[in-house]
Length: 264
Length: 264
Image (cartoon, rainbow over all chains, first blue to last red; front, side, top):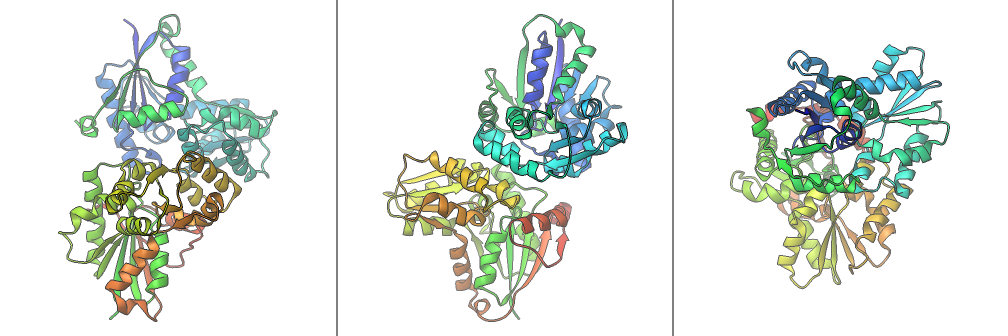
């Protein structure tokens, strides 16, 4: 019997993490839950984020998954530490891997890009500083990247101009690594690479997340063709539309799950 | 005793409506409630929108206001029709006035700009078509305008480029009036006027909302200096920061109201 992997996200952004998992671990059955009715989590209180995450992860557990990936940055940072004791399954968030990559690879300085909520919560900056105190690190909130990605404009001139405008806010900071601290941002990776120039690496934590999962479930990492099931708490049509605009069209059925069903 | 006016919005956008009210009716005491903990309303179900609006309006009623303005487009469209019977106060939404202006002033065609939720709900387009069936009308979702305004970039080249990119989607539609169907968009008015050119009028419904309120409370329309109180359900700092970025700095105290207090 093949491994079953649950991927939990507050919305559609986690599809960039799912994409890396499918590449690295094709021999598995996937269940992706996007809590699109209650997105974004970043603006909610910590208690609410933990509760919503518990509900979402419990729903995936009910589907018989063997391992849970928390793709949402907010949920990874706020909820995963509290929920480890409640789930016997491996529970893998994206933040740890982002912190590790930035700490391992940056030389002059690390610039963390995220939503305003992630950057203001100082999630990545604090953990990178703990792991590598001498490394200069700074956070930069880029809230416009999310709607740009969802409009399907990630490769447009507008996207380049917006990226440059944000990066200008850090012209006094010397960095050689940009960490994508929001699951939407990998869709902007090529644009960001153009904006920062050749001597700066732009890094997506989900590549390391997929490696970590492959370490836990080696049988899923070779051969086979993945089977993917999507579950969303808001309209399947909206989810499918945004996924297509993001360049990740969904060919499978997307099942609607009422939020009330998560509570039971 | 001066009139007390309650202004209800799901967030910070209603400040553009408040601004017009303060200009037109300076002789009044204002209470502005922004339900910033539960914004945006547009993505919620109709039942939830009605319930949140009922809670917010009841809170304002408890402050002794004489008239209620619903600045939020979603709440105006979805909740106001259901709530008229529950509130003995005049209850004035922004949608009616937007529909009236567009129907009265447009000649060739009316283009309604709004968030994706407002445009997909077909709120303005349907009501304009009912009022003036022969007028061509089209909706255009411009979700990027909200974060552009909240970043304080409304007058930037990026804003002009984004506006042009959206308007290009309607190059096959002939219109001489653009209706701003989202309370954030008046901050972009000058930029939009540049983008559409001289022969197209860009209209903000809140000017007519203020006239309607002045019709109800004539004593508030002359003399005096307004007194304004702000109430928000999320952090006052976030509200104040975004208001400043939008070019509407707040010099008064902003009071935090817990969502639980709205429910009681």
